[in-house]
Length: 102
Image (cartoon, rainbow, N blue to C red; front, side, top):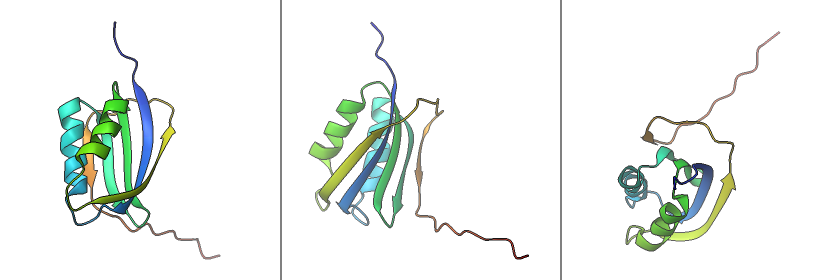
């Protein structure tokens, strides 16, 4: 029987920047055939993941995290499924918003 695909937004807080966490998540996702992205933000690590077996993906993140990392909290939110072609790793981007001047 084919597994149902899921789509999750995952936020992980703690010591996750500068310890190899983003490359770890990227490589794990590729190994498990998960599509989506991972990125560092001021809020922590943001992961959007899509595919079958996301429970295993999350379990392995918690159990095999880089030795210098320390997870203080994590949250997962089930999203509407949309097909992502690959898994990407992105650097932190500063979002800027501009309002038109009348």
